[in-house]
Length: 154
Image (cartoon, rainbow, N blue to C red; front, side, top):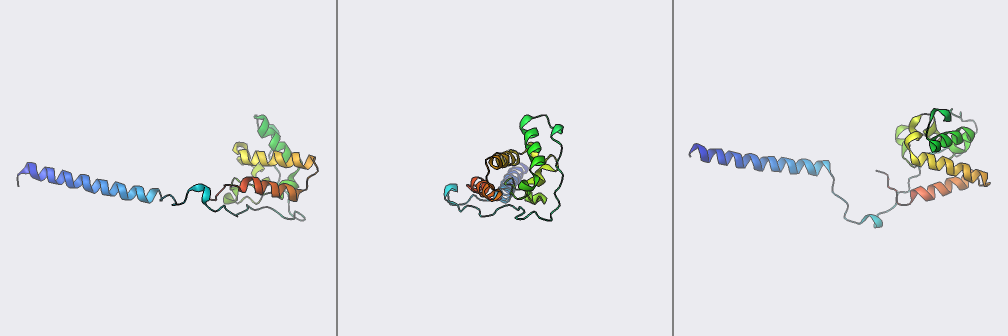
């Protein structure tokens, strides 16, 4: 074979091998989407952790609201400091249990809740409902109902 023909054959083989490797790598990186459309998938029944009973459980301190400049963030940290035992009895649906949080209150012991709308909204909702005389159990059921709709743990 002429050197030009050899070069073309090797170049074609290199392109084919490269395409095969790229295709194989992409298949591994992005798993196939499920066959069923999202609206028909089963909902997750997982409820993140919370304390059903806080008697005898040490209540962690939350960060001072004054550390935060955004009004909603400041308000949610203030709520966490005002009703810590109630927040200990509530789950948090931002899946922070992956970083060992045991309840909604744990989101406020560091800067985690500063950037998390789910944590902030849940705390502010709990405070509003407590002012309306709702029980912690009722608030927990409301949060579970609200956030479990359509959420799937990944």
